[in-house]
Image (cartoon, rainbow, N blue to C red):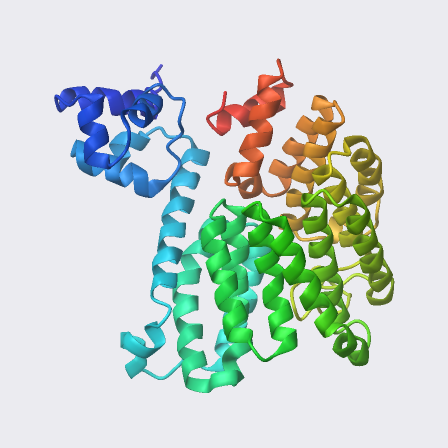
Length: 407
């Protein structure tokens, strides 16, 4: 029977010693503190960014695989792959003027119809929670939509806004909130002068600001965008743009909850609920086409009530509201990403209500629904860590913790 390789921190210590380096010497070459190196080697600090692993490997003069280990857990390899993908997206955002200065400037822009299909494919990939694949797609998609926008102007503005929206959404999920903020801000810049496009861009901007613990600016931008398009959305009639208006109200409610404004959050969710009664469910098979990819509807509003209650610390209320969500007919028709992300909120609610067993079940259900939602998102790791620290956990939760390298 083959024994498992030692943890990554121990491999760092072994390779450092082999290179006759002290912790201080390694820290100096990395531009880190000695304490940082010590915590890495003792396993207190996780190495879950591929760029840091590459820097360590370069200083220690080994292949990154020597640090990751050839028997690295699949979830560890997936996290390293996702981190590498984020670096690729960061490089693409650094080249935001590629349409003017890069090799694409000498080529014809991709047809708008082709880009529209690629945007649709990217959204579907996001809804299936295949985040590593999406990260691989995004750099080229960003470059091509930027090029199309520089060539066709406003005729391709919506495509570029959509590309930035998808980019921001996945970056925020994976813990790169600052980069997600940048992508959303780029979307807002492209959308300037078009209230509906700006409203669509305000959705991920609000999400990014909340992820960066800035709920009040998130509230300001989402509620302003919602009220700016309210008359236009109403004239268009349900449910064409009303779903976007309702989504912005939901985002504003979550921001209000994050700021501790219980009354404001409740009022905003109630407004969204009234709009959801008009639109019905959007985006699913046999339902109204959701041109803004919001997933808005009565079920989404009920999910928002749970998430707001969790943010406000009302665990018992969140648990009671949760039963209405999973009991709804539309629940199983929601995209895997939406269901799994919500189950993480529900798990946090159960934990706040003092029911770690139910929290563990929600986490395991989320993993079965969309594994990447649990194995790649920092919020899921935090929840799982909180559970394991409270004492013995059921076997399925223990297996999940071990798969994430937390056991």
